[in-house]
Image (tube, rainbow, N blue to C red; front, side):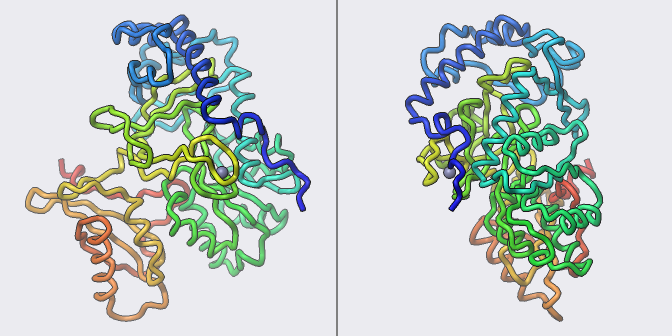
Length: 441
Ligand SMILES: [Zn+2]
C-alpha cells in the first residue's frame, strides 16, 4: 500500500464549500481593489459600469462587474505597450511572461510576478498529485516550451518529486525513443497527438502496451479528453489511463484536471472564481447546463483577470467528488464558441461528432467537418475513414452514421467515407472544421 498522503494540500482541497466561498470572497475583494487602484483600464471600466470594489458583499456581486475577453487583452496591449494597462505591478516585479500564439493576430503576453509563478507551479503540483503522480513516477513533458504557458508545468511535476524528462515538442520518432529508453510512466500531450503518436508507434512496429511503460497520459488543448469515446480509443492503443486537463494561456498552464476518480475536472477555486453564463444574454446558467466559462483570478498580482470570457463551452457540478475534494468540477469542455457550427438552426460542436465517430469500430476515429453552402443554407459533410478491416461497399456504414447523427444531434449530415490514412493527421491541435463558406466570401 502507498504510504503517500492522499492530497497535496489537504486543508484547501477538502475545505467545506461555505468556508471556501468565504475565502474566495476575501480574495475577490483584494483582487478588485488591486485592479481598481493599479490598473488604469480596470478603473475606467469599473467606473463606466458604476461599480466599486467596496460594493462587493457576496460572490454574487461579481455579476455587476463588466466582462473582458481576449480581444480586450490584445487591444490594451497595443494601446499601452508592452504588456497592456491591465497590469497592476511595475515591470521590475514581473519575472516571467507566457505568450499565446495569436491565431487572430497580435500575440499576447501573460505576465507573472515571482509569487504568481510560485503559486502557478504549486497548483500544477497539486493537480498532478490529484491525478496520482508520485515521486516514484517518471514524467515525460511533451508540451511546447517555446513561450507556451504549458512549458513550465514540468516544474510542478518536479515539485511532486517525479523524475522529469524535459522532452518538449520533438519529432515522434525521438519521443518514442525516449519512451523506449527511459520508460516514463506519465506523459502529457494533446488528445489528437496521443492518438497519432500511438498509431505512429504501431506503424514503426512497436506495441505501445508492451514496449513502453506508460501508465497515465494527461491531455489538454482540445475537447477530446472529455469525450469518453476518445479517451477509451487512446487508452486502447496505449494501455494507459487518460486524464483530461484544462489550461488557459492567460491564467495557468493547467487550471483544472481530473483526479484519480476521473469524474470531471477539479478547479482550483482558491485561485480562480468560476462562472458559467449564457453567451448571448450574459445570464448565469444553472449547474449542469452548458454555457460559456468566465474566470476571475483571485491571487494573481501581475495581471489579474476579472470576468474573463474564455469562449469555451462547459458544464459543471458542485457536488463533492468521491475523492473527497470539494472544489467544483467541470463535466468537460464541450467545445469553443468559435468552433460552434449552426447547421439549419442546430448548434453543432465538433466534439459531438467526435463522440459518434470514435465509438464506431468500423472507423479509424479520424474525422473532419466540411461546411459548404447549398441553396443559401449551410450544408455539413462529415468526412471519416473506414477501418482497415472494412472491405467493399461502405454505403450501409455511411447510413448508420447518418442515422446516429440524426438521433443524437437532430441533423442529417452527408457522410463521406474515405480510405484509412487519407485525412490529415494532427501533430498538435487538430483542425477539425473546414468551412468553405468563408473562403467564397
Ligand atoms: Zn475528485
